[in-house]
Length: 304
Image 1 (cartoon, helix red, strand yellow):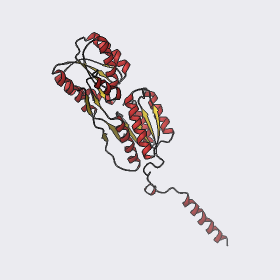
Image 2 (cartoon, rainbow, N blue to C red):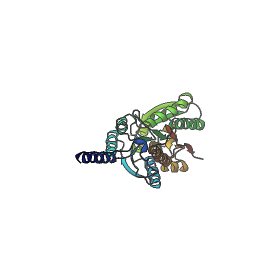
Image 3 (cartoon, one colour):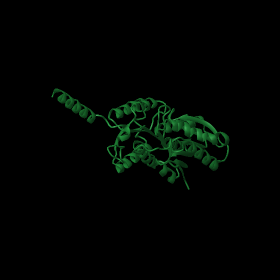
Image 4 (cartoon, helix red, strand yellow):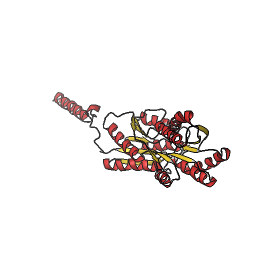
């Protein structure tokens, strides 16, 4: 009798143990479209209308998909952004969407996500290190070339141009500048360049200084519309007639182009970038393959 009881006890223990085992990875169900997905979005700054539109694109698409979104604003502070991303990881997000303030500084946070198996999608700017599943962005190099080509067509070869550069270390700064100089170094005369950190007030102040030192500037290429709009204020105060080209196509810039205050802007589609980033995150979580870069088309908005 004891032998029978021992055998039954062993059998019951084996059964209970088997019931507690996790199923193998291949047997686990994939997350269906929008089912219990939570993503974190870290934006470089929400003071810039471009990134507000990008955020809205993420939120609107996530709502359609039934996906929860947690949004954090780095306020153009790379250290704050790293801490924000670490906090998102602590909150158990399934995927991270990051618009880096600084492409180098964000690498540590990307690597933290990698170590936890959390997929990372970057928007508008990428990360220098760590595994990024895909970058959703416009072709910044092509956009820079478009700006230089437009200035050359309007003013001719050899025109004297000032360049307002974006945040040092941001991939968009490097790429837009690189594209611009592919044409400008051959066809234009870039007589001054200085960073204004993608900021409108700094764009105004930097432009005032550049005009004092270079009174013969004929055109300005700003790496974003905010700096371009600041530059326009400085130019208006100086009484000069200078052609200004921005980059982004934000609402204020498009209005300035239509009013004739700004010559042109290389228009991105930030809401589309946000939408495509959410779709990419969902596809990754569903085990689908995606391209390493997902482009959003550019267009030239110029005064008639």
